Image (cartoon, rainbow, N blue to C red; front, side, top):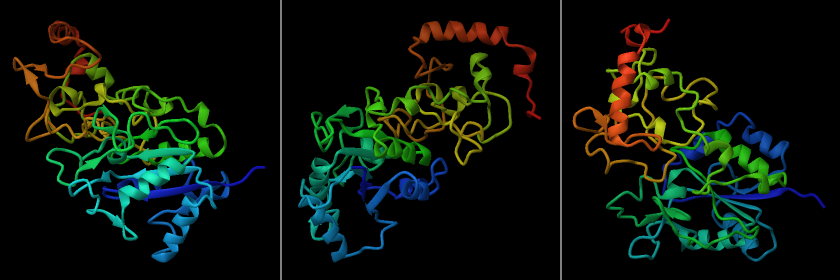
Length: 326
């Protein structure tokens, strides 16, 4: 018999940015989830009317098996400090990490929303005083809080929907797929991200891609309509980052690169890349003064430098003109 899909959303060590993004979803909206797609939100820290002992009652009914838990969503890191006790982050007189562990093992599906839940994100960056950790990854290392072998009741690992924050429609569309019985159609990549969103590079659909091919840079930060590629001088990570930000636009209007803002690679497990660019993110780190330290698409520095020189020499006049796009 068909029934509603019960969702429990728990907030860990994070800024609440993914919730704010989620509330701005358009295709479908959060209201659509409830009215049209059979989502029953058992608890969400920003949406639910329950508080205090009422929340405890909801939690206990789930853990007692009285209420089935179909989808467990985690936003934010699992905070393990101090010294593994988890007492830096308490909920209803218990370390939140204990609640997360129990709910994850009760749920049919577990979904990590945002970088912090997926990989640890900013809170897990060294020196990590909160002892924060992602659900099934710590940066690029498989394992995380639940362990590499964790599988939900339905037999799947944690479904990672990264981003800082995640695009709202990435989240709502995955929740719809699970709630409508199509979870098995959600193919995951090697980092457990849905391939429908994370198979292509952020560069795909970028309106500056022709300048990337001609190796023509934009020299000034924030020039939204100026010609040129942000990779060569401004540290854009679009050619090395998997996301559909230039295919599924933010607010249905734009993206970072379209607005003249370098992609910061926020869907990749190593984000933030402080170790790669000490002191600044928005500057391309180079070797020999001209070759980017990180060369995209599996090239090597020598072949890249030769290709770049040839591309610049062959670039058409329009690609080199210092003028604004009409």
